[in-house]
Amino acid sequence: MNDLGFNTLNIASMGLFLLVFIIGLVVWFFLNRASVRANEQIMLLNELLEQQKKQTELLMRLGQMNSPQNDAKVPAAGEPIMFKDFIAER
Image (tube, one colour):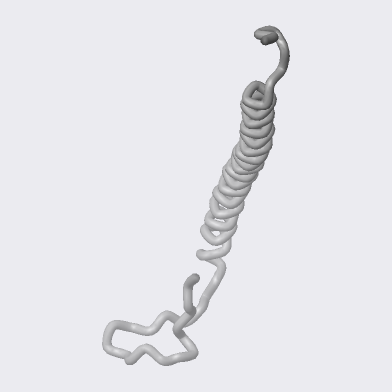
């Protein structure tokens, strides 16, 4: 009959293609969004690491400045270490 007309097979295949295309766009959107957020978090974590390094360096300098003036009692080799002399580190 009419070869140029739309039949149900053409409409179904176009509808399926459109559905797959829309699903692909939605998946791409969420993957791209997650990637951008992960990159931002990595950048923020790197900045935080640099600030922590600076703080650690500053604390080390402050500790070295105060160490000769600090006359805290350090237990000798023969003395047992008491709980009050122990400072836990993180």
